Length: 615
Image (cartoon, rainbow, N blue to C red; front, side):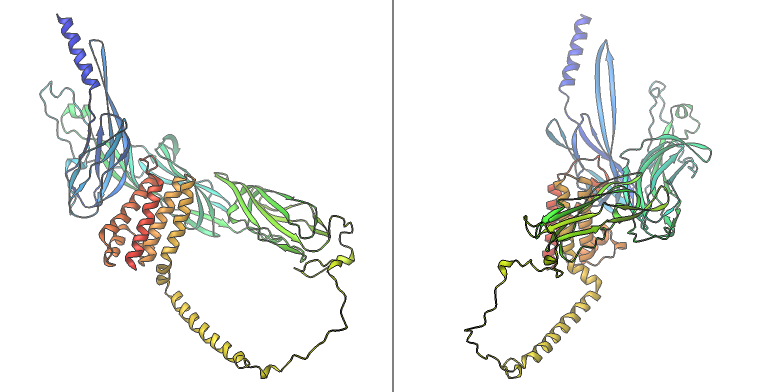
């Protein structure tokens, strides 16, 4: 009988497991003060995809989502059961005082979309000193056994010093030549339990050309000794830098808001001290500035275009013997490692008997810690208009070798081009064909006619210019044109003097160019560049169109400016929401995917809508 009851119990438990419904709930603190961060947690009992938080126009998204999972395993009478829990955590910050609601989030599970409950938060002017500000993780499995309540915890956290947790900007060199590459890695050093980094302000690198090499999606720690002490160290971001100026320049400080998980004091209660209360304590970090000595290059022996690195030069031409008016392609390829972004087109002196077109430049490079590696190619198209053997000599390329710290010159083989009158011509520039005028077609024997000197019946058809009816107009028209041009130029100069007005006038045109580039990145599925270009287009348009300086360009300032310009709040809300959505997708690549075409079309629509409202 007992076995029958046991089997029935196990069967009911299995049926309950199979029939388990999806649970999707949101929770948050009830009250928070201005300037305080708070968490909103979305809990699932099944793993989902495409999580989208609800609408939060009254809050700023600081961080998230971060995912944590837990498992509950039970074995009863040899029967195994397991349940999972998935928690997505977002960190927000209020924008103003009041009572606001964050809408329900959505998630997709097994092809079906679910919506959580919404949460309401009351934002007060003063900071809220509640237990939620000191998040705790404590569980005493013996509390019920001994009929004890959880003990109170001291609110005094242990002080975290700058020797326990700090930021550094680590460079591979602090003295180099102008244009020479260097790497800078932003690292966090810790001897405490670092639970997260909420917000990071990276250096601007105003005095450098900066290329981002690596960006950590999650912190990966390793042991490192610094100043005789051992730390857990994790790289956050790595850059490749090229100094733009010589002299003593600085790498600015990096700032970050961190959270440290600490064990809180449990008073005199032994059980609380044994099992431990835990709290998250905020710590603001600022890295020291780095001084970099940038030296001028030694005096160059010849024409120097600023190339620094290690290079090789290759030349090829499509043909060495052609007919006049045939196009010839001469291609130069520079390969190696160096500052390709500073290398200019090599100067080539062509004979005046050639018609020369603008060269076509192409670049195939990759960025690494050693610098920019790859190749840059220039293709010159020329058309010889006269026959002859043209010896153009060598093409020289002067660069500064970063290894030997010396100037070196690369040279191509001699460029020789034989141009003939036609395929039967073997003279290649006999004196009969040695023309010196540029852009004059070759004249053959069939084009020459004898002068006719009889039966011409010539008539005099001439009168002095002063007697012509249009003679006065020769003096009047230039005067009128001068006055018109003067008025137009003065108006143009006046408009150009008002920089803010010019920016406002051309804001739409500039934003459309940026959207065009974003469209190209969307076609290439280059998401990071796409979002970066969309953000630049929206910020740039708002700043230029409404005359907001870059230093004051914030979401609150744009909202206030749009309202003062009689722009509907709904349109302003669309602009701010799209900027936040793009920033979130750009700086949190591990988050849910947003269709690029939707973002692109929404950006175009918002800018067009603003243009119509302003007009």
